[in-house]
Image (cartoon, rainbow, N blue to C red; front, side):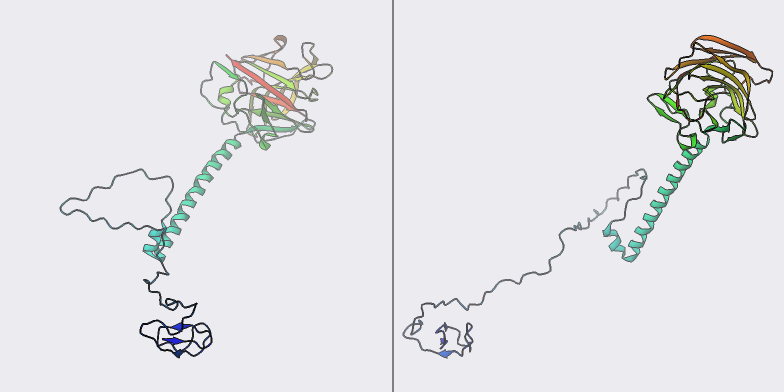
Length: 350
């Protein structure tokens, strides 16, 4: 046994040379009849310097968030089951990290190529949808014409209105479905509260045709629609119905207009459009049956061959027979200037 002369700590390991507490050189001490030290230290702890033995601790354990199942052995003497077919998904699954690691850099490249292919397919589908919407928008039938100079700028498309399909015997449009153009390409026209709203431009008139003009043909038809001024200020050049409307080879408006003015001194006018230029058939005439302000009025035109008869709120006002041989076309809606008007409850019967 050895003892530290500085702190009197004793050690049973005779191979130690220096104290583990203060570094002093140890001195050998003797024992009596037993193995106990000759001088007892109150702080004596025979296990103080015992070495602790334990299994080596693993400092680099494997990750626990990845589970690789053991390979399944195929029973001998039994055929391998056939793989079941499933429809190809609409998207390509992302390659797993496990597969990418198995193939190394080649797996990552394949995964990247698959991602690019999926993205490309998505872009193509999106472009097809946008193209279809733009194609529908391009069929918007509209025109803005300078009222003073009679010049017309038009983007109207008459493909639908020239359809040879037989018209239905009765059509009712309560303007709850978007059958008419809207948005910036329709001069700001829009739907609201079950009505179709339109505005003109300064010194311009604007008319709209429905998307499917074949269902709105006016040949030998009785056409009714309700129209009103939204703010009570009637457009100066009137608003109302277009009958036998179409565009010619110069994309200019052809047809008839039944127009009303619902300001002070209510009145109506009947005009004919040729090459976009309006000519007056019936100059503004007073109409006591017209309601002014924001109150709706029902406008009606009955077409029979070359004869057109006009009604306001169920009362007959005028009948004309024109020799221009304009007897068919589509129903349209018309307004002028910047005052907002709204249309509702259109009916076409034959």
